[in-house]
Image 1: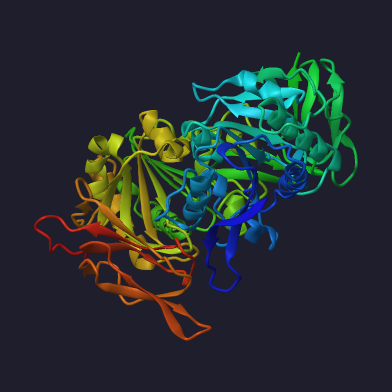
Image 2: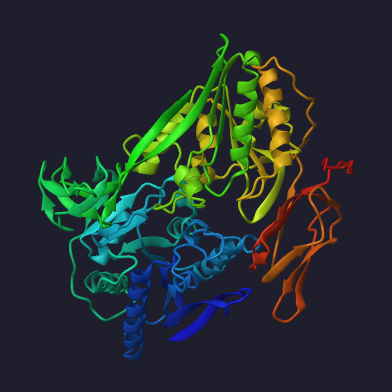
Length: 308
Length: 316
């Protein structure tokens, strides 16, 4: 393993921001894995740290294939992590909306450029990604539909579900999208939690990444088989919205099966405790996302269901 | 008449309401919409909204048509000095056109678009952010330049910046409305979290001049300045390569030569200058950094490259 500072940013008053890459094996650029681009992506950094630990062991045992190099960047924006912010410390911009970056541009464009320059030329790219909404979600792998996406590759992770997302305008500045434009086969792996550590789903994500590396011949240590991944277009995922505001309680279970018209949550009045809304699913399927904040506004996505 | 155009219940005993003041007189069908407060830290538009509403109501006999004033599209943001929508950490100017079946920000955005659609002209007033100060200017996407430049010239701004299209800007209010056929002009002026009275009065004159030109105002107006249009001229960006405190020695409207010193980045700890900041091209400074603390990459100034004849200056 080698450790390399791939980008340094000088701060007026803090120690330098040193974005650090861990390299394993030597040879063709086989796979790159990126963890936290945002300051609240603790779970994403944690999964990478566990991956680095595993890859160290594999390298010592000679179980990284000859002529294959793996890079892992566990955390880009630890400046924000250290002060409890999600986006960039000063201007609140999101590094994952700055790709491919620009070396003469603004601070987060420069960081994105510094990171992206190092990440180019890899055959596979894996980002540990997080959702915008606060909530728990089913661990899964996702690809962006860019016109030259091989969706079947998601099956090599052996996760339960592989989701295909049609990019929206704001997706065009994400790492995942730009990786694909620069001809890296890019995946986002979602490991349930974001600003807390969920050990079980972190292990699921870690195992899925190792399985992918084995199935693509990058490592030689066999990983036990996973699921027969079901590929699902994002359009098949239904959103359930809150029709009231108040205190939210979920009665569903992530990954659980629900039937049409089942009650999956309720909203109570924050002052008198009366139930003001019973949240029912309009569809039968699997619970893929549940909102997890105790307070909920009207018209908030509180559940996502993978439709049968 | 004050109308609520969108609302949603918040968790505890409160509703988020987007309101407008719809001022109407005469039989004219022309409708002008003044929109501001998409970003909660931009306040120049608040004063402008007050000035427009106040002047019209004091001289209502000169109005023939409808002026709709939307002072706060992001009221939670303005109330809490938050640029984006609090709770969602979301830039509201990246959620348009929204969706009637979407999340709360999306349903609010969709209701705003529904209400604004059909205006003859919409003016979306911004005031940069807390970091940069902007000379009064209209920003227009190159794809709509032909239609919008004549109206932008009526607004008494110093500068019209015609910029290239960027995919990510497709989710802005202005792009959404323009693509639906509602002519929308984006104005940037001043700096975040402050009110620059002179700029607000400058634009106020422009708004009434535009109203007169589109036949909905018969009261007195003043002649407006001729803006510089950026067509066929490039814009030079001056970004810091050093970290420290930026102290400028140039001002807005200064005509600078390439290589001319426009400021320094200073290190308060060592007492030394970390970098001399120089103009990247000949031209005029129309954006200047207001917030002193800078990292590598922080934008310090924008310079409109001089035209071949050179020489023109912004009025100060």
